[in-house]
Image 1 (cartoon, one colour):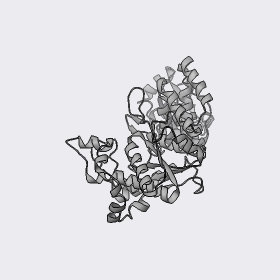
Image 2 (cartoon, helix red, strand yellow):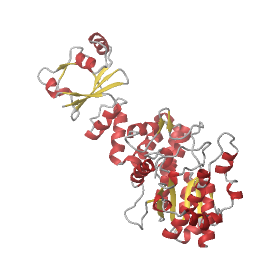
Image 3 (cartoon, one colour):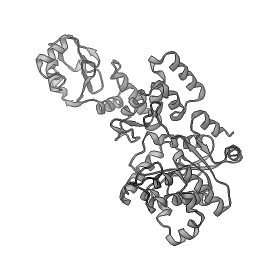
Image 4 (spheres, one colour):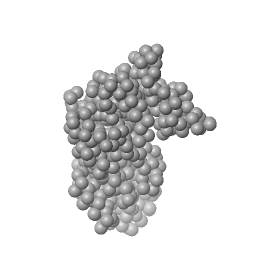
Length: 425
């Protein structure tokens, strides 16, 4: 088996391949161009999208050329795969907007510096220019309706009395197969990868390439991911965990990974990090011998945040996590900026901390950490008030610039989890 397939196998990426006995040899023979399609149904990818993204990144690391394909054209139609009802059609303007956002995100994971390294394409560039009659003559004639209705994505919908499937979605299979044909003809792409729900569409593409071009094409699918408890991966009570930092902050993503169950963390380390077998094996042993330390979860959270948001964000989000769990370390400005997104914050004039300073009890009331001065005094006397995570015992304390310590900020805390960040003007 080729090194890439070995990588996929031990990491858990492999569900099916079109030629299980020979695809390894096919990959060994030459550098291959490999594509995966990404539907622009939203302006951002989510954590579930990381499986195909990481697969393309691994393919590139093993010497192959990746093509992430944004479905600006197929997104106007809607993929019926895995759906029990017709999708709401998006406007062309919305699809274009979503495609632009996804394009920017994918470029973080894959080297697209030259066409030889990797290509980012949008199928709207050719699908929206197709001549319908010519398409039906040249492409449609190669598809048997008898075979199409046997595909899971179609068959399940045909069995649904209340919904069925429209001709629009029924035609999606032809368009995706045509994408594969176009990429094979124009860019020498002969391998398509995707989730296991894409198996029928991928096989249709390999058949079309064989019939029209007379060359070999292959497909690889990944298992659809759920947690060990059966929940949908990448979902929280608030909704999807997005790769866009404006939709899901790096800290929120970090905390999602930190909550990974012991039964899932090793599998997720294999899929969502570039750590090697030895490193993951060591973390697996740590889960077995010292699960309470949650070293594997913190490693997973840090590495995934680094992959998605970069080194600076990973470092800052790890610092924020430690601060919110009581660390007294002094943060840098990037950590403070991230912290300001996660806890209530307000502006505080430096002048108010000059001279005698500002009464601590007044600050607790103005920041709503206490309802009144009396309640604030009780908090202090009970040992429940902290400045920059250091306990304050004096109820009559005046807060001055000497108490700030952090670059341009002061963190107040009441009890275990109530925080307020004062940003100094």
